[in-house]
Image 1 (cartoon, rainbow, N blue to C red):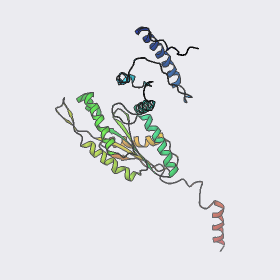
Image 2: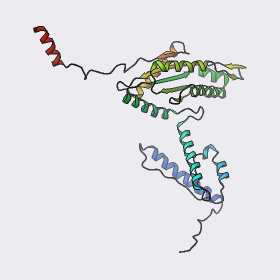
Image 3: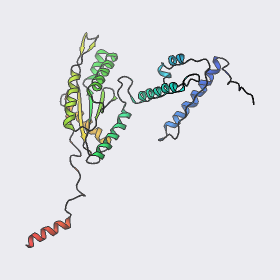
Image 4: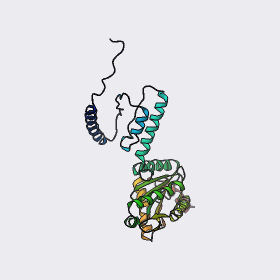
Length: 292
C-alpha cells in the first residue's frame, strides 16, 4: 500500500464537471419527487464532492445566489469548529426560509397550521384559551389595478411589518396567500385578543404608501375575523380556521375596516356523561321526599 495515497482525480475540463452535475441533477430531482410522495422520510443524506482550489470567500459569493443558497461546504484546512458553526447557521437560514414567505418574511401557511395544531393541543391540555384572527386587506385588487404590482407588494410588506411589530414574541403571524393573513395568539382569551387586534388595525389605518401613478399616498384598511378556543372540548383545527374565516366574511359584508367575533364552540364543558347525580340517585331522593 503506498505511503501517500494520491488525491482523487481532478476535473479534466469544464465539460466534464458540467456533464457530471447535470447527471447528478437529474438523479436527485427524480429521487426528490419520489420522496415527496412518502408521508415519512426514513433517512436523509448529505451529498458532497471535493473541489480543489475553491476558497471559502469564493464559495460565499457563489452561495449568495438564491438558486445556490441550499448548498453547503466543509473546508478541510481550517478550524473545524468555526466551519461547523457556519454550517449550522446556513442550515438555520435554510430552515427559516423554508417556513417563511419570501415577500413578507411571515410564516407560510404550512408552518402556521403546525403551530395552530400545537397551540390547540396545549390549550386542551391546560384548559387555557388560544385566539385566532384572520385578516384581509380591504380592496387590495383595486390597489394592484391602480398602482401596479410593485406598489401592491409594498403594501403587503408594510402590512406584514405592522403585524410583526405590533404582536408579542409568543404570537405567530402568517401569510395565507394573496392579501390574507393570520395571527395565532396563544394563552389569550378573546377579551384580551380583541384590543390587540384593534391596535393593529389602527396602525394599518395610519400607513401611508406613496403611489407614483396616482401621485398621492395609498391609505389602506383591513377586515378581521376573530375566533377563540377555550380548550374545553374537541375542536378540529380546520373548524377553528373556518370559524375565524366566517367572522372575516361577516366583517366584509358589514362594511369592511372592522372586526367580527365568531361565536364560541366550546363555551362550557360537556357534562352529559359526567352528571353530578345519576338517575338512580335522583329517583331515590324524589321518592324519599314524596313519602315523607
